[in-house]
Length: 158
Image 1: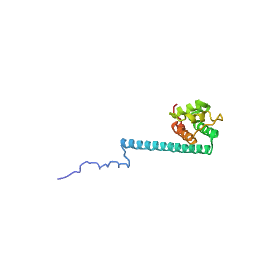
Image 2: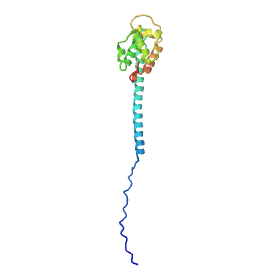
Image 3: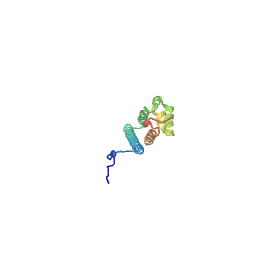
Image 4: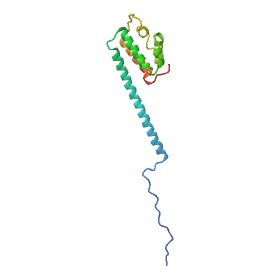
């Protein structure tokens, strides 16, 4: 028997598989992970900046009101409040008296300054009257206003 070779071509090997043959689902997972990492990084930076500004503002209030009493204390707290409100609420710079107290309470979303504190901030800086106002409570409400009004984050709607 005479066998003739079959007319076959040489075997052609397929191309080698690449090191990174990702399907669309993996690409979606990678893009989602990168987006989450970038978003979390952005939030963390903003949060740390806010905490630093809040700490600086708190230290500024303590430094500005250290060992002050009476009208000097009221002037220092008012100045500090107007400084903190300057960027977020530019319209507040021209307010004084009862309009200033109304703005502070409305921008905080709740009534913070009432009775002696409201009198101290609205009239105590202009008139030499004796106002019995607890300095620690006034400073505490000023710091509470700063967080509730979100003045460090650009303010909130009044």
